[in-house]
Length: 101
Image (tube, rainbow, N blue to C red):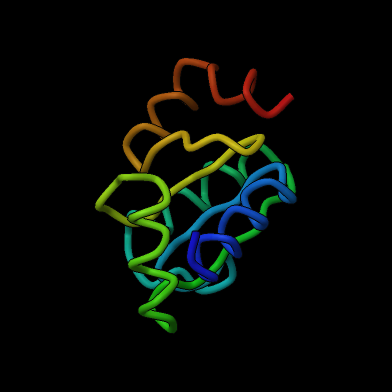
């Protein structure tokens, strides 16, 4: 496993909710990333973010780690959940709330 994949693995496993996104939770740089931040803010839960725009190695690494090509990518309890659309759908159905309990 390369260094970047190890780092991603550590972040995913040491944070209950980890979001790899464009920008930060305070300043999302795309609509999809902003929508994910909105969901977690609405749930009033702590979550960590990493900006893939400032680090190409991280951006490529997270896609390889999850085997998912789009950003943002959401990990909960060490498991890949999906991107923006999946997160919003899980939120609407109440499944996301169950995942983060």
